[in-house]
Image (tube, rainbow, N blue to C red):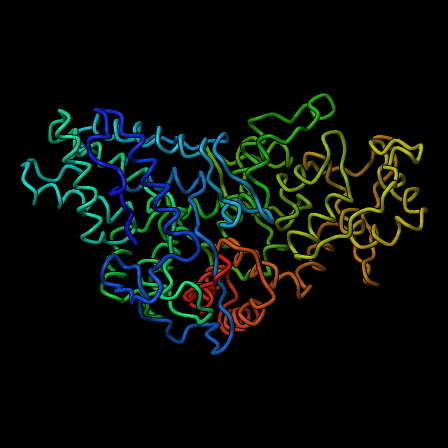
Length: 569
C-alpha cells in the first residue's frame, strides 16, 4: 500500500497552503486501507516498513492452536493518544486534542477502534493542528534540531530527515516509495519559494496529516483470510506502546521490533517491566485505563450539592481523584495481590483528604501513604472518590453504588428497571433523610424487589459513608444507620463485610482480566475470546496474582500477538 500523494500534481500545492494535497493523501490512504490493508495475492515483506507477516508468537500464555485470536478494524488515535504521541515524538508541549474532537466510548472506554470514525470536520482539525504543531516545533531550536538533522540541501540529507521522522511518526520504517512520495512534498515546497527548513516543515505537516500517523494500521497478508497470523514486529510494538503508554513506541521498542527480538517471550516480559517502570508514561495507563474503568476522570466534575455538603470543593475533588490514581498505581507497581484491591487498609492522604477522613494530615506536603486502623475504611470502595462518584448530588444511593460494583468490579450487567417504575420519591418518604427506609418502601413493589435484591445490599453496606465519602453513624433524621446486608444468602455488615464478599467472588478476578483485555486490544469481547481469557487467568494464577503479572499474561497471549483478516472489515 502506498501512503501516496501521487494522485495530486505538485503544481496544485499553493505556497504555505497544502491542504488539498494532504487531504487528498489521507482520503487515498484510508480508501486503500479500508478493510485489512494489503495487496491481495502479493506477499508482504516485514522488513519493508514492518507491514508484513512478521515472526514470533512464541509459547506465551494463551497460545492455543485452532482458536480464533480475533481481528479489528483500523484504529484511529483517540485524543489522549494523539496528545501523548506528538509530545513524545516531537517534544511539543501543545495538547491540541480536546473534547471538541471526534470520539466516543464503548463499554466504558474511548480507545475502542470500531467507534473511532473520521469525518470532514475532524480531518480539518487534524490538518490545521498539523500546521500548528509543525510551527511550534520549528520555532524551538532544540525541537527543530531533532527533526532537521542535517543542513545540506542534497537528496541524501532530505531523505535521511524524512526517513528518521517517518520512522517515529509512522511507528515503523518507511518504504522507499513512501520516502520518495514525501520527498516530492519537499521538492514542491522548494519550488514555491520555501527554503530548506520550510520544505522540511511542509513534509512534517504532511506526515502529521497522513493516515499512517493518524491510524494504527495492521496489515494482513490476505485481507479476506480468516487464517490467523502473527502481527508484524512493528505492529506489536505499537500494540504494546498504546496499551501501556497511550503513545508511540520509543526508540528501544522500535529497535527491538527491527531486530525481531520483541517477538520473543523473554523480551516481551522484560519490555513490559521496562515500560511500566517509566514513571511519566505509565502514569498515562493509570489515568486512561483506571481513570475510565474506575471513574476517576469524572470525579472533578461531580455535582455534589455544596449547600448540603459544604466541605465539597474543586480542590477536594482533585485530591480524591489523585488518591484513586495513587491507590490503583500501588497495585500496578507493587507486589500486592489483586484480591487485596478491595481489602487493603491503605489510603493516600493530603491535607484535603485528611480533613474529609477525620485523620491527622502528614507533616510533609502532598500525598502520603497511610495505614489508619481507626478510620473505618478499607479497600477501593472505602475511597472518598468512589463513594462520591457513586452517589447523587444531594444524597447517597445504595442502588447506584451496588450497580456500580456489580458492573465495574464483577463485570455483571444489572437488569434495566421495568418500564413505568416510579423512583424513591413516589414512596412519600424523603430519601435524603433515611434512604434505607425509602428503599424498603420502594421494594414492596414485587417488580422492583427482585432486581434491587441483586445490588442494593452492597450499597446499603456502605451507608455509613455519606454522598462525599465522609464517615457518619446517623441519618439526617437522627436514626442510626444500619450497614447490615444479605446477598445470595450470605450475611455481612459494613464496608469490611462488603470488601470480603466481593473479593471472594470468582467474578472479581475474572473481571479485571476482561476490562484489561478490552482496553489493551481496543475492541470488545467476543465469544471466541473466552478460551483466551480463561487461559490468561490460568497463566496469571500460576505465579503471583498481581496486576503487573496479569498485564504480562495478556501481552504474552496469542490474542495480543496474532490476528486474521476479514472480508467484512
